[in-house]
Image (tube, rainbow over all chains, first blue to last red; front, side, top):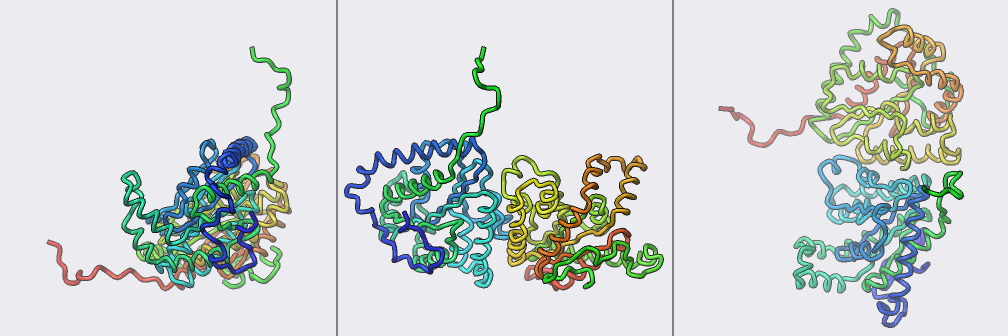
Length: 267
Length: 267
């Protein structure tokens, strides 16, 4: 998985990763189905442990361009995982109250507690992405936010939060295809908005903003992974594998039962 | 006011400040009444400007030992100031949900928005005070919190928050007197709790924790002031003066009226 990790010490460019990467697996969607099912089962098991032990906090951040596959990732990777311990926080256009506060205010409120997995569907990173691309705050303000984000995530980590961040990497052709599909298939129409086309016109500005975000905020305590995401099955497989391996390394255990339960028979 | 400011570059000890300090003003409570009234009026004016302009955020942090005078400070300094733009956030024993999150979670939720003055009656600093004195989390965890607090407040400041922090400095004799008063006067009984006596036994541990807090977290963007607080009138006077002078330096103005109002007559 190391090849998808953004080295915290390097300035990166996105052309380093191929959005079409399929790991060299032929007929991959079909071939990896059993492996993906196994990872999904393991994630279910780990999530239950996490919830029962109520010691660790887990934060998963998803960022991507429009149509990058954030919603699909959540649906497939967390398919069947008990929603009681998993919460999705979606960061859409900020409310008036959110805009009146510092940029981390709304994100921090949604941070996970002990035993919880929280998935940020978009996140505080929008404040160095859309905000930057559309000049919503002055440059000297958003420029400082990389440092503030690093400090914020370091604090979360020091306070017991495991953080994983995924950038879903699709190319402009793939986006074109997916936007067209949203127009062509009636059951996908609801996902299409004319503003998506406006955003698409800023493609290269967004790529630049993504590159700076990845270069400046991948840290040992909160690493970014660039996930090739033109192929949905490969995207899901990689993300499942990275999450599962990370959770396994927490070496969790069920809490000790109350003393005196041994041999107890319910009458 | 400079003599009460904690120099951000220095390690301080509290014996540098005399809790009995009265500024050399004889019969001070009476003599300074007109000045205090003037400051109070000016604070009212500034708060209304702040609210109308809705551009700046103001955070005032009060920390002290028990009976240090936090409640009295709020009552007197903000006497008559419109509560619509002033909010007091009191940080008592954390709830279960608060304990399940990182230590800054509950404080950040209460941070001010544009146009707002928020007073923290106790604060995130409890997490390097009571938490430290009673070993509620391991040393290597609370030791990191100074750095996290500095980064958090820097972020608030960069996002438009003016921060002032006041440590109310009373001595052990004064505390004794005030605790006794809470026992002796029926209308003050409700403020007395036996646990106050337990805390009093940790006096020197708390003083040490205060000193480290002041030494490590006074910053140009979020300075600490050590306020001699044995004399309540002097405490109130100093704090009023520091807040008023800080708000004056924001050079606030009412927002421009809508165009076309000139000469408009309501019929």
